Image (cartoon, rainbow, N blue to C red; front, side, top):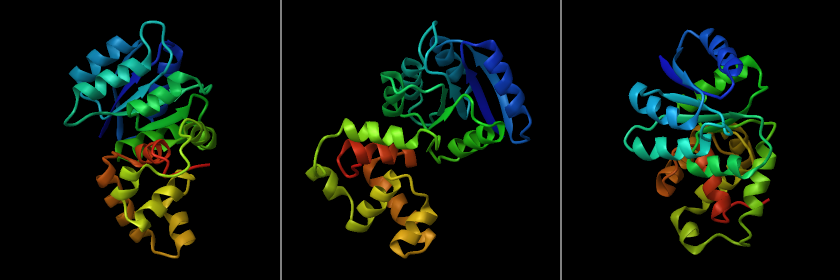
Length: 218
């Protein structure tokens, strides 16, 4: 059972998410709150697997809460799924850099929200397809280096670097496999080793690392 904590300052939004997630037999909403500080308290007490976190909340923003939650739960941190209207501000990119596991829009389809919770619970970070390109472009803009940092380039083999670069372009394992003429299982194996080397928890953090270190560029 996937235990979920809802964090949003709008009661109607929380109620809607509770109804949507309640339709899934493998998901249980264990708590909800309206601000960041309370989210930190509940995360520590309820030990949720996934936290659906709003970004902007009058009582305390989701970015600060995410950083504190992840810093406190070092051994077994919850997966934070940011759910927002998304307007390319510092809060959004700060949240990605803080270590969130996923990013979806508030107007996403109910089935897609359920799927997003399941995916981040399994460690498969994601960014909503509607904003993936804009997210990656912004990270690329913030990383002006023309070539990978030497220390970054030395961490990965040529094949691992190639796969990470394609991942940063938004490709799935199957798409990467077709691009490189290798099996999907081989892509998964190479990607797993690359993530271990760079200390990334999931695919999303691997993409963030790639752009931050100049391994991937637009």
